[in-house]
Image 1 (cartoon, rainbow, N blue to C red):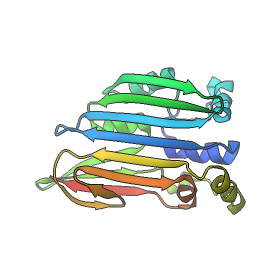
Image 2 (cartoon, rainbow, N blue to C red):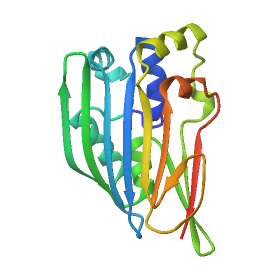
Image 3 (cartoon, rainbow, N blue to C red):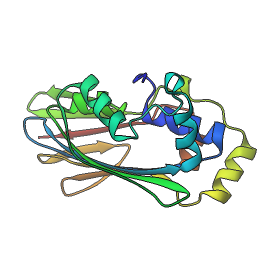
Length: 203
């Protein structure tokens, strides 16, 4: 599985090629030593999952979905422990709920395909989170966006990060206490032609 295609790239492929959609929640808790835990909760149409299973040598959906995918991604990333994994099928969508531990935020980035960069800035730390490079995002027609808006009004991408310290400033997201939150609808994400970037400075 090519880990250079990110979670967000998968979303584009899934929507553009299969008229299917993804709801994704990612809750991350970071410790002082930059280790932590992440709960991944997402659902996708059975059509998208079934197409992905047709030919394992030509995988279409390039994020970990099955237990085997999770184990392979963890092995590739290193420093990832799968604490819990469950996948259910309600007939129209597959629902995946997993809890993983990570040794470093960078390992989590390799595992999920989302870029996490943690830097020291004097006495503070600066955490940067980036989605896929905008050049990888396929153009989506207005007609397709209209279909997505009408068919999947409640689908979204959500990210919550619990920061181990006092938050100094946040860009591209909101925060309350030690929790930084970002949420975007699928439609708005697809209308965005630039790389999405969030930054959090804390001490």
